[in-house]
Amino acid sequence: MTVDPAGGYVQLLTPEGERVEDAAYPVSFTDDDYRDFYRDLVIVRRLDAEGLALQRQGELGLWAGLLGQEAAQVGSGRALRPQDMAFPSYREHGVLYTRGIDPIMPFGLFRGVDQGGWDPREFNFHMYTLVIGAQTLHATGYAMGITLDGNVGTDDGEAVIAYFGDGATSQGEVNEAFVWASVNNAPIVFFCQNNQWAISQPFNSQSRNPVYRRADGFGFPGVRVDGNDVLATYAVTKAALDDARHGQGPTLVEAYTYRMGAHTSSDDPTRYRIASELDSWRARDPISRVKAFLSKQGLADDDFFAEVDEDARKIALGLRERVLAMPGPEPVTMFDNVYPGGSPELDVQRAEFDAYRATFQ
Ligand SMILES: Cc1ncc(C[n+]2csc(CCOP(=O)(O)OP(=O)(O)O)c2C)c(N)n1
Ligand SMILES: [Mg+2]
Image (cartoon, rainbow, N blue to C red; front, side):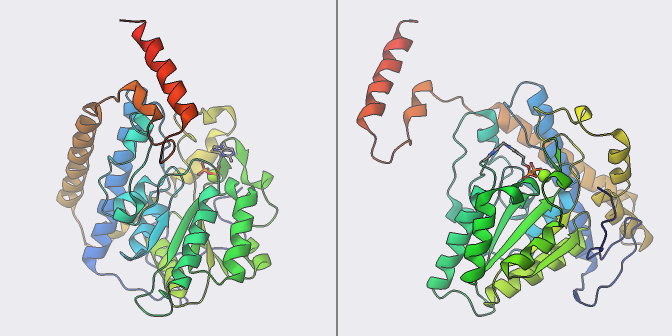
């Protein structure tokens, strides 16, 4: 794999922080927009670092990090309108943040004190899905429901975005989702963060074609965007969502990016990838190019950057305190919520478990 994909991609901000135009994606941003993008990127990176630190200190069972993917997530997340529905996989903490959701929400899952459930309706943000690719079918069904409800075809139409990885494109469910979305013209954006690896499997072991070109075989458009460019990711995702809400059907967006950290806290990437690969992607860092742009344009000074860092630090420390204070559940509550109305088998198991625990008193 290379840092510059053959065939190119949509880019609006170069790694050196130069703003470039793309006639297919005419967007304009205010000075505040640029600064807000920067702020989100820094805060999301800081929260993610806190997640990994908490895991290393034994406070979380697992952490799935997003280092390097901040722009793909902040750009696409900010392109969502309030009425749109997002279906994440398991590392979309940045998208979650841009939806205005308290970043503590997924920590119960990673700390193992709840089952990772929340009300998707409350935030228009579905639950994290660890079964690779499964959420793409859920999202497609949801998008078909939007059409049946008559909520597409206007400026205020609803759209769906489904997040998944490069490895997930090999999964049957993802391909089935493409078929269903295509033939039903479902209002959905398939957003693939191609971070080049599926744990230790490089992308070239998944497909001979680039991700975005696979859309062609299913009969809908595919577009590749520089996933380390928050402006381009925003513009491309917004256009795809608007097409969906106007009744133009699905789009596959390939956000070409790189997972600079490990797959999860349980993984050691030094076992399968070479250090120089990481170095070449570090030069494409999604945050430093926005910082370079802000500096060169005179849109921000050292005080601004220091203030953003300080805000991020405070938010992360607040998160840490609240994670440490999360109450541990009564062990027997693991039997709750398995079935809506309970089940006789489960009642027997619960009684056995209660009796077993009672032997310790
Ligand atoms: C159905 C299924 N098969 C296998 C796994 C184990 N698994 C967890 S993450 C992963 C790799 C996913 O790679 P990718 O889709 O590229 O997503 P990334 O983590 O790189 O964002 C695998 C195989 C799983 N969770 N679910
Ligand atoms: Mg991947």
